[in-house]
Length: 343
Image (cartoon, helix red, strand yellow):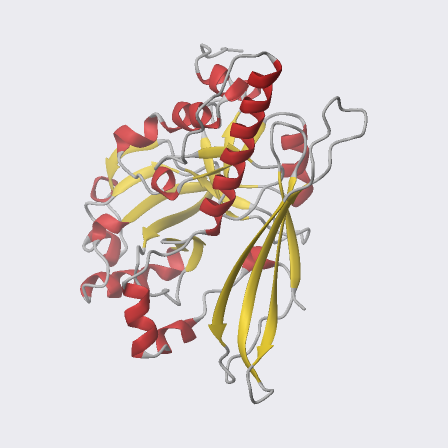
């Protein structure tokens, strides 16, 4: 059984445990003809010293699907650095038609719903203790953000007040493209997504032919202090693009060595130049270095809805730091309203 678990931090101090597993289900012939995907969610029991111990509750979500005898199951390991699989383009027409009728599911949205539910229950419990009556819980909005305990691929690092006065990173939002490993050459890295340069690529007089023609009118953003150029591309509901690494569903990233493939996709009409965002520089850390910066309160770690990350326009990205903190709520929202501290 392939089993993994994920802690979802909540403000009440009692983390949820999210656990999934695959298991084979035998048909009438006795052969494994289907697989069941199970997600079990339960909240840990509160300490016995609590005045009103919270009973343990569980939620099971199951999906039944036919098993493909020709498929190879992925080996267990670090899921943060998965490589896009070009075999996805060889699916049957039946599968492709089903995909066109369904939204590209994002497991992060499922987790965000759990977090919102935990927050609503905490508010309801506090209201009961204060005899304030019933509080109506709100459904998850189109835009959402919430704190998570550790960095993961596709999360955002939101600069705290401690970085005010540090010109490079003050009030920045860094999209983590890879959460990294402890290997010296494979640390976490990402790009700043709320620092538009208000320039287009053609203004930089690029020598690369693809940049000078196909992507000439694409906007430029400051990505970080390290010297390398990267780009984000919105793939939307399209099939996975083998040449690019997916960060979150519908969003991939590439570097200079991917420009030829990117330009070819534009020329074929698969993508448009407007689907791309180019970054000058990037931000990178050693694995333990980023962990220490987070523990020292230089960064808030958050998950947020894909429409916040994929925004792209100068007007939307420049206010992203405040918007994410406000969506996170609580003391994060208070931080977003404080004036900048020039150190």
